[in-house]
Amino acid sequence: MTGKFFLYILVTIFVIWSMDSININQIFKKNHIIQARIFYFFLAISIIYLVTNFIMDLFTSGKIF
Image (cartoon, rainbow, N blue to C red):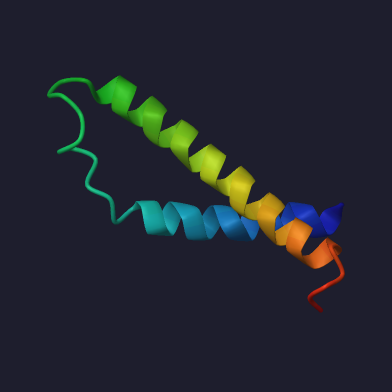
């Protein structure tokens, strides 16, 4: 279980770093800052969850490494 925890931390760093390149100001309406931040947060959480579970499934399937 500790391996999955460290994988979550590593994936979180990469997801936040990569999402920093997205300009979300052009996507949302003007003066809707709270909604944009909530969407950004949920999008980051869902990407972190999906990528971490994909990597864990890839390694635990036994077909690779």
